[in-house]
Image (tube, rainbow, N blue to C red):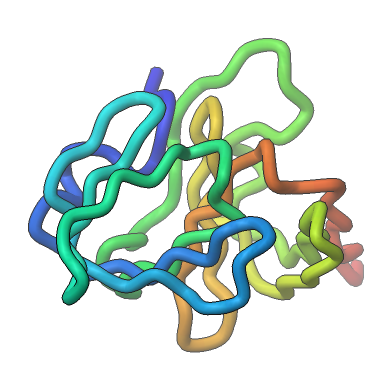
Length: 134
């Protein structure tokens, strides 16, 4: 079972991080990834970001390809829900509309228009699932 969507596979890739309580996004290239931290190279120098401070991470559409098939225990949001339309409401009141595409123990992946976002579950207040018309 994968703990995080953003893992070592992202090393060398460009990302844009929105941090809780900070207006300007932090952009850079992923240098190193651990369970609780992400090291990125920025124009200002190397930066270590603690995962608990992340509101969401914008990644390339190709980096969030396919759908998750991870089996999760003791959760309501499971792999059967991938592809569902969602409205994700973050703790800072930001609302993100899109399709649920990946799920891990600590993060979800959402395709929102032309963006692909990795959102830590710790930054989410709630998720509204769009009802499917039958």
